[in-house]
Image (cartoon, rainbow, N blue to C red; front, side):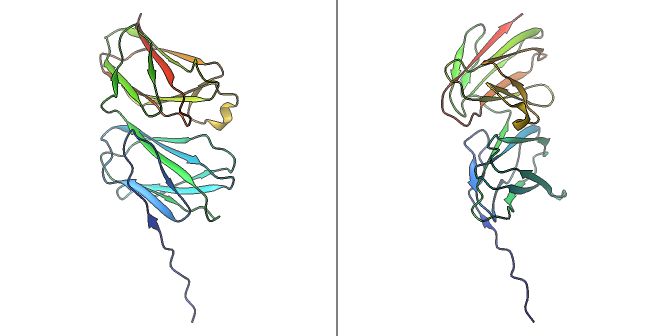
Length: 214
């Protein structure tokens, strides 16, 4: 009697938080042994023209499926608190060679300080942070030097927010706050908490960030 061949998965290098994504092909997986104990953003970017199907799971929870159409190469996001558990992402796409870039981001130690009332540049996967005042302030997220879509993740009080500027079609960026212009201004009271901003764009042109108390 013939038996169905067992699916063999190949494990790729582990994810590093707030770093460049790991690319996995069909029947490959990646992940991390311990997530942060707080909200994080998982990014899944389909690098292939064919449809991508992925499963992500953490601890003993039911695996969740994400499908990304071929030709949509905007990073899709999953925002969740995995409670310092492990996290595994598996590429189960039907077509061999379907590549997906997987990234993981959370509130961490910034690459540089975010000064008050001074514009700074953030290159790809570079971050900035500061202690916020207990009052309203304006956070400007910009891409003055490039017409390409520039993506920032902002972590502080509550759930993180994904922002994208220079977006011509917001439908490719579900879950994001988008702007068709080259700058997004965010007015908020971050209640004296730490503020962490990271540039997770898929291109290498630097973006610009500025923090101004109101």
